[in-house]
View 1 (cartoon, rainbow, N blue to C red):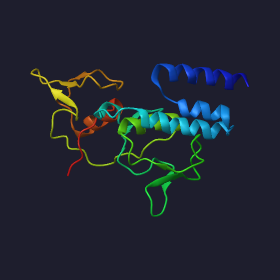
View 2: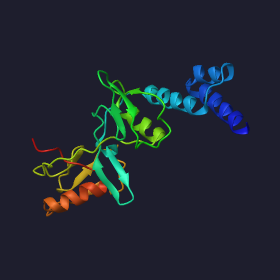
View 3: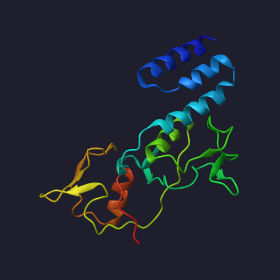
View 4: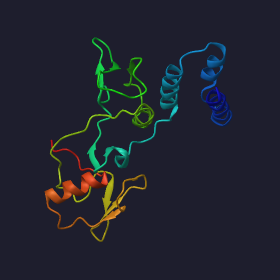
Length: 191
């Protein structure tokens, strides 16, 4: 019970400062619902409330214990572990999904990339990887620019683990692939 009171207090503080969750917190007090359902609804409401901003390549990766290993495909209809329901654009958790958002179907096609990222964090799910042959004919990854000195400089939004300045001259394709995977900075797919 103490956790519920603490949660309601925190939700009211957020409501006062941001204006989110007002319908949800009143609904919880008026009509008790399972906490899991309440948290799922909050995750969807929070994800949908994030304003759409330009996508940056710096955040488009999955993390594993070995490092950043793939660029994620937020254009996919469903995240990994979810299945597309027949004759709809809704996704339902599959048998292998073990996160907190398994009780209902979700419609992701209207969410921005940033909202999908936030939903992924809250629901412990990730989007599929983009596996393709990369076009290393450009000197720098997408979202990076080549400086006058020939190094690559990341956009301000880059938040990967590597330095925002990299000298990739002399790297062959295998070295660029390794650097790209580790740093979460990707070149476009070959067409």
